[in-house]
Image (tube, rainbow, N blue to C red; front, side, top):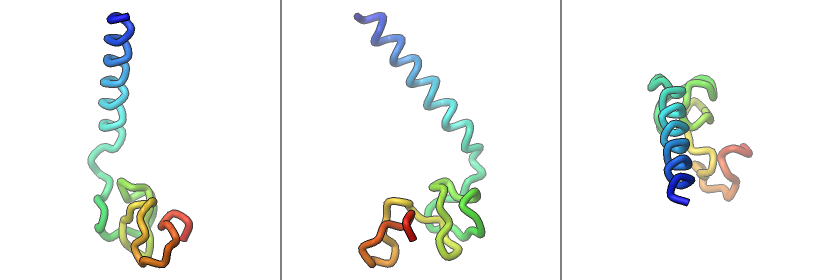
Length: 67
């Protein structure tokens, strides 16, 4: 059982390292200016600003990713 936990832990660590490497540090943070979704770490550029897809920037009750 402990071997399984160690294997899962090692796998999760490797996956996290891979995901961090894939971002390349070149993605823009929330609130930064953008012209395309690809520029944002969140994957969503809304009206020229990187936003959280699950947020509601304009407080209209509709999540950002659906606008």
